[in-house]
Structures are given as C-alpha cells and as structure tokens.
Length: 113
Length: 114
Image (cartoon, rainbow over all chains, first blue to last red):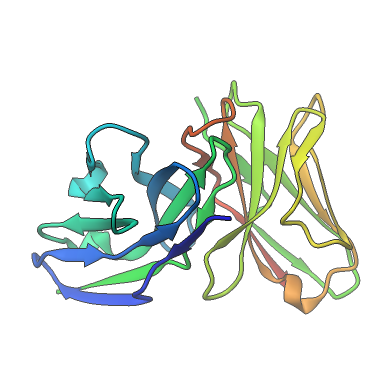
C-alpha cells in the first residue's frame, strides 16, 4: 500500500521569501510523484511530476521539487513566493504503474504581504 | 480542446434525496477517476472507470454510491439517499490511458446535504 504524508497543514510565509513544502511517501514499489495546486473553489492543477531521470524536477510558476529515494521525500520549493501563490498544495503518489493516485492531506500556503 | 467538465458545480440536496454528478472527460480520454474531498481532508480515491467498465471501485462506500461511464455520454456518480456526511467536493479526473500519466482534473461539484 502507498501513503503520502504532508507534515505541515499550514505554512505562512512573507512575500518574496523562499518556501519549502514537505512531502514524504511510502511505497513498496517504484513510484511516480506529483505536486498539485488547488486555488479556492477550483479543481487541481498539476505543478510538476517525477517519473524517472533527473531527481530535480522543475514545474510551472517557478516551483521545483527534488526526489530523494533514500529519504522517501519529494519536497516542493520556490525561492521567492508571490501573493498569487496562496493556495493549497497536494503531494500525490502513484505506484506500480497503475493510476490510482494517493494524495496527502494538503498544505495551505499563505503568502503574507 | 475543452478540459474536464463537471456539472453541476454546486448541488444542494435534502437528506434522503438522490444526487447525480456528471463528468465529461477531455476529448480523447477514455479513463475517468472520481475523488471525494471532505472538509479539511485531502482527496480520496473513489473509483476508476473506462468506457463501460469499472476497473477499481475500492474507494467507493459499499452502499448508496454507484458510478458508470457509458459508451456514449458522461460519467455519472450517483449517490442515493444522501446523508449529511456526503457533503463534500467531488472531483473527476481523466487521462488518455493507464500508467503514470497526468490526470486532468475538473473543477469539482460541491454537494451540500441539508
């Protein structure tokens, strides 16, 4: 069985400061990892994904994430946040080549002016 | 190319009524997934369907919930005899095939049970 842990339910950060949203996963087989963003009252939009290859993945809106197999982590980072980044961020995992996605409970990023 | 479409966006039902949620996948996508998002919780997988087939319904409650994806028309998530605990946002996603492809999400249907 696969699972995803997002340790921080809320992260406040000042505008233009860097941010890291943490994600750890567990799976007994190889995994594919995703970060999605959800703006208020909207669906999920894919930020970035790791399938294979380089462990540093770059996504949209200046976000990036690094896959660390030994630590079973896939933390999301952005060097300088904007007000428009205020949203909820979900880490997700797919394992075993099958598209049953398991989501974390989400991290609410609050960017403070 | 329109994205995943869901309707209605908001649905209010009284306890005991039926709720029907519709999802039209992106053009060319034959795989549909339904997720439920309860307040202050992440998305939970409910069911995975291909045209005319239910592939995995391990996340569906055993009673009152059903889903279909007919050969023609949208996928339907049906909740019979709704209860207050069914109040949630229901999201549909689609993909062109199985495997580790991106799932494209619809805007969701927010169900409120009075």
